[in-house]
Figure 1 (cartoon, rainbow, N blue to C red):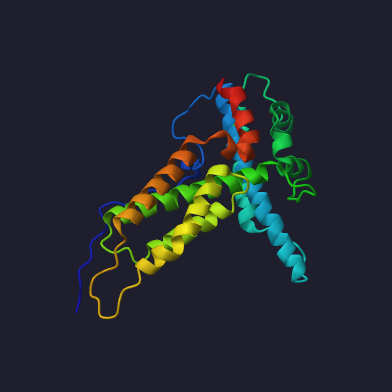
Figure 2 (cartoon, rainbow, N blue to C red; figure 1 turned 135 degrees about the horizontal axis):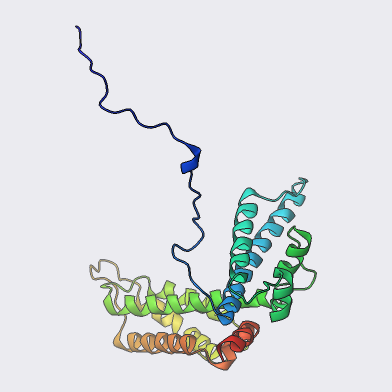
Length: 261
């Protein structure tokens, strides 16, 4: 079968390299100006990101050595590390001229002492683990535990109030107990821990369904009231950050205070 064909209505133009554009995915769409205080706070965040990246890479080095392999930087480390360094340099552009060197600036505002891995990385160009544990290592783990405790408490409170079955409440309570136990020397958490220990066995037993019972297990009003009071106390304590919960946060809080005062 023959098919008639006509010439195209329009021929696309040949691409010319003069029309090439460079994508800046990591840069803001609109130009912004950061104050010196904002630069300092942004640098704190970027140093934290780079420090965690270096820690992950040094851990990978250790695993490679244990497998009798030569340590090699991962592609993801090189890509992400370069992106963070680029963001750091972008931050420096907002400072008064002449723009300081990155290493000098971090040393000037105290971030080199807080993140020694970052300082060594900038000097040597490769990730190195520290012989002594930097103070900021405790910051990240402490923040993570506080966040976990807050989320678990809020979830338990939500489930107590709205779920038709309390079947898994004992399990949720045991998870909260484990997180609380990871905090050392916190008086308010020690008291909550003792309360859980005193009530847990009977609470768990009360949720065991009798043979042939078709009803979903429900806690008594007494236990519901106790759990709600406990979760509210935990949430209030974590969100208010009393002094005894901020000891491991002290380096970061002290640093931020100089820019927020």
